[in-house]
Structure formats: structure tokens, C-alpha cells
Image 1 (cartoon, rainbow, N blue to C red):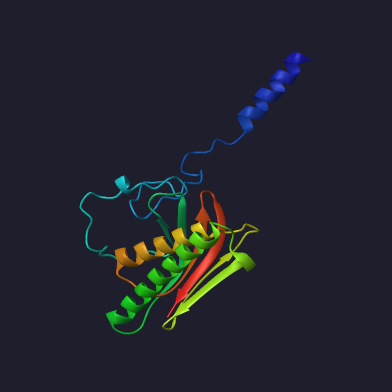
Image 2 (tube, rainbow, N blue to C red):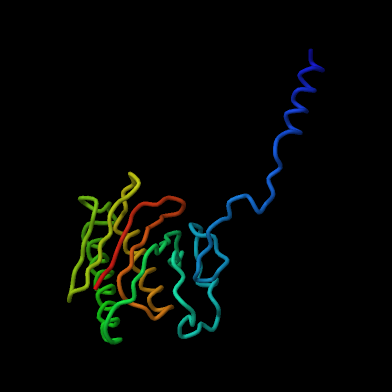
Length: 182
């Protein structure tokens, strides 16, 4: 009986397809440096020692962009270049900075708590930013702040402004979605 079970298990193992490494899912990497696995701690040491002023290529969409110093990253799933002169981009950049400072104030006043009501919207000078919970997870103010720092870093790297939709990840888990628009 043991010989029969052993031969049966051997036959089963031999008939199982062998998966080549090209068929296995690949880990997502940060576009910031092209080698850090998204969701792991992204260090400033991963970036080139002499950064270029801006990336001279088209904006890749979807784009995985990691925030320095943590495990938060965003996946930009949709982007439309904004209208108008570069001053419009500067206005949006200042609005993102203002939202980051607003969240920092909320954290100082109330601690790094979950976003009450499941969403936070911030509008200034015609620029709107919104972050909301997703996938039955609750996003904290600190994670949303890290996501906005990442979107600001992405805007700087590609010298872009406009409307963007992005997913927010904290480590391996998607905890929110966000958008910014003019």
C-alpha cells in the first residue's frame, strides 16, 4: 500500500507544470530609483547622488512613486497635463504644499489618527485635493501626508501639473485613493 501511495505521489509531482520565473508575478518597484521594491522602506540613499533637474521622458502611467523614509507609496493611475502657463503648475504645487502643512497641523493638534468620515478634501485657489479610504482600510493622516509628499516629489521629478488619480499604499496594503485637480 505504501508503495502505491508513493508511486501515486511521484506521478502527481511529475505531472504538475513547472513554472518558469518569467511566469511568476514580479514585485513592483519604485520609479524613483527603479530598484527598490514598493512597500519596503525607501531610503534617500537609493536615489542618485547627483540628481538631474527633472526626468526627461514622458510620464509613465501607471507610475509607482515611493515616499522617502517610509513604506508609503502611490500608484498614479491617471494623469492629464494641466492647461495654462507654468504659473498654473506653481499654483498647484503651492496648493499641495499647503495641504501637507494643513495635515501636519491636524496631526499636531489631534495626533496621527484615522481620517474622520473616511475622506479629507482640501481646496485652495481653485486646486482641489482629496484622499479617501478604500478596500475596507482606514487611512491615517500621516499616510495621507506621505502620499501628498510623494505626489509633490513626482510633480517635481517630471515637471508636471494637472489632474491625477492615485492609489495610496501603506506597505503591502492599499489603504486609500486620492486625486488632485485644477
